[in-house]
Length: 241
Image 1 (tube, rainbow, N blue to C red):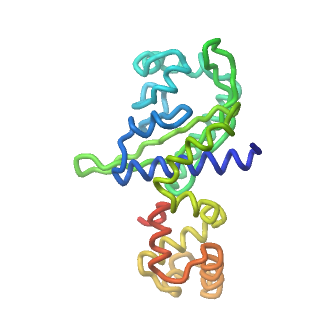
Image 2: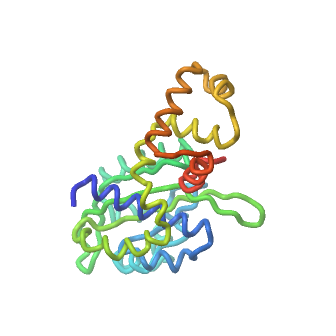
């Protein structure tokens, strides 16, 4: 698979996984153990490893440790399983992604991880995304991470496609989603809130002509013909507030 194909495959997988969780179609353990890779959930009050609240069986087995053992390692977790210089760069990128607080975007990268029976460095393609969770009438934010081994990824596609079929709308429309600019996503959010073009112009400090141009581009990219279709797309890809 090419790098672009890997990216599309991995990010579709993560969007569908999160959607299944948020809708209550599955619980995390059911979905996590269907993914042919490592699935983790980090608590976002900190990115330190002791805040990993979930890791699927595949991830634990390939690292050779239970979740409890991994959390007990503390910061040594990174030294043990990751290439140190690479890890510093990737953690800085994750921290920057976290600071942006953009729940509609993802952060993805290739990384080397010591894994498998020989605990050797293997290449993984990793995708991170914010995940909202409601508990006791409070909204908490976590980061869900899916890391797929690059070797043999082509063999995983059929298995993961069975998961993607549970949310076929996301799978079919993901390429349209990634074609949107950040400004177009902002305008979709405002449109779903019932804002008019003049109101959007004032809120975003851009001309009415520019708003109209963005709206035309959105219609063309998404191939939509009604507000209901726009709203369905916005809900699927978390573009509503």
